[in-house]
Amino acid sequence: MNFKKSNLPLLIFYFLISIILIIIVNQFSDIEKANEIGQFKNLNMSDVVFIFCMNFFSAILTLIFAPIGMALIIYVKLIITISQAPLKEGLPSYFFWLITLPHGLIELLILLICLCSTVIWYKHIFNKTNSIKRYYRAYFPKHVLYIFILCVVGAFVEVYVSNRLFMYYFG
Image (cartoon, rainbow, N blue to C red; front, side, top):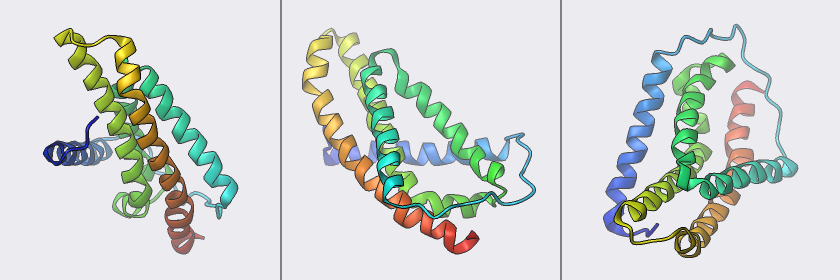
């Protein structure tokens, strides 16, 4: 994935489509709303490590399985999960999304990198210009580096920004 300025409108388009899909799925979701707000705990550094590990290894597995379209499957599942989360927690949707926005955008960007990796893979297959070895040599290390950095930042933001916002309003 080459982060050129010419790719920025496409990335913004993917973000907007993702947000629109989340809102649409939330509006038509038939999950019963929780009667009370879920319990939240104050997270700490050990949670940063756990969140980083979960996000990083999930993203790496998604990259490894890019040739079979794993990112698309996870992308669809994530859209559904994000759209149903406020209902399960008993929170207003707009409020939940505003609080999770800081780390949610980072995690969505990670998933979009994985999704772009899948698209790159299929582009090379259909053009018959690349092999699986070349894909893993040329693109995989770059994507892993981007994802590693984003996962570190995302874990800290989730624990020290999003969680603190939850604790401030509901703790």
